[in-house]
Amino acid sequence: MKLNIALIKGDGIGPEIVDSATKVLNKVLEKYNHKVVYTELLAGGCAIDEFGIPLPQSTIDGALRSDSVLLGAVGGPKWDTLPGHLRPERALLGLRKELGLYANIRPVRLFSALKDRCPLRNVDSFDIVIVRELTGGMYFGKSGRTIGENGEEAYDTETYSVMEIERIGRTAFEYARKRRKKVTSVDKANVLESSRLWREVMHRLAKEYRDIEYGDMLVDNAAMQLIRNPLQFDVIVTSNMFGDILSDEASQLTGSIGLLPSASLGGCKRGLYEPIHGSAPDIMGKGIANPIATILSAAMMLSYSFNLDKEAKEIEDAVEAVLNQGYLTADLGGNMTTDEITEKILEQI
Ligand code: IPM
Ligand code: MG
Picture 1: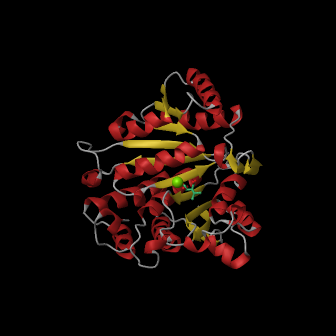
Picture 2: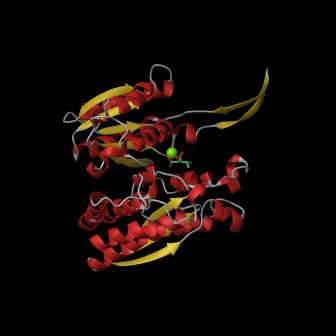
Picture 3: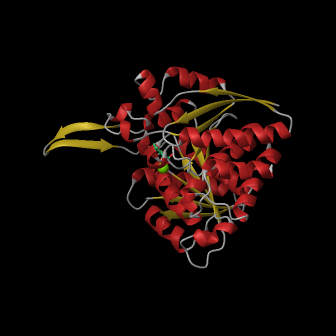
C-alpha cells in the first residue's frame, strides 16, 4: 500500500515528537512493504510567523489532498497576546472543522507497567475511551462582545442540533460494540437546554442499541467518578467542551498526559491524529519530550485510516514492551531522552 501522509509538526515540542513518530512509522511500514510519502504543512504559530495567519488555505488544501494527517502540537507564549481569531489554536479548530472531523476518539488506558504512576490507590489497570464531539458546541457557537447595562460583556454559546448529537452518539455506540458494550453519556441536563436535547437523542439511540448498557451522568459527577472508580467506564460520550476537560483529567490517571493519543474522524477515512497534550514550550528543544502519545497517534492512523491493524498493533506492542522494560522519559520520572526512547521502540519492531 502507498500512504500519502500530511505532517503538521507545529510549534514547541511538535517537530521533535513528530520526527520520532515518523521514524517509527517508517520502520513498521518498511517491514510490511508499504510505501509512504510525507508532505509537510504549516499550521499554528509557525504559520503565523511565515504567512501572518494560523491556518493558510494551502495547509487546508494539502490536508485535503492527503490520505491522513499527523499533527504535533500548536501554540506558545510568543503568540499568546494575539487576538482570538489569530491565535495558533485557531488552526486546530479550523482543521477539525474544514476536514469535517466531528468525532474525537481519546483512548485512556493505564499500562500495567505504569500502575505505580497512577495517583489512585489499588488501581492496577483501566481502559476507557472518551468520544468527544469535536465540531460543535461552545467551541463553534456564537460568541462575541457587547455593551450591556453594566458595561462590556462577553458571551459564548453552546448549540447542538439533533443531527450533531446523533452522529457522535452513533460513533460511541458502534465503538462500544467492539469493546465492553457500555456507554456513559456525560451532560449537564439539570441546567443546560442543549444538554437536555443531548440526553433525549442519546436515549433514542440507546433504544436502537439494545445490546449496549447505557447510562447518563452529569458532568460534575463524572469528574468525580473518574477519580473515584475509573473502572466503571468503558466508552464515555460527551460534548466538545466537557470532553476537553474530562480527557485532561483522565490522562493524569495514566501517569502522564505524554502517553495519550487521539484520532479525529469524520465521514471518510481521512483523519487527524495528534497527541492530546500541547506544545510544552517549557521543554522545547531540550530533547526530553515524551514522544509516545504521538507514536500511538500514528498507530491509530494506521488502523483507522488505512485498516493496517497488524502494523498498528506492532507499534502499540513495541511501546508497551519498552515501558515494561522500565524505560521512561522525564514526565514519568525516568531519564530517557526523546531519541533514546524512540530508539528503544524502534528496536522492538
Ligand atoms: C485539545 C486542546 C485543544 C482543544 C486546544 C489547543 C484548542 O486542548 O485538543 O484538547 O481545546 O480542543
Ligand atoms: Mg484539551
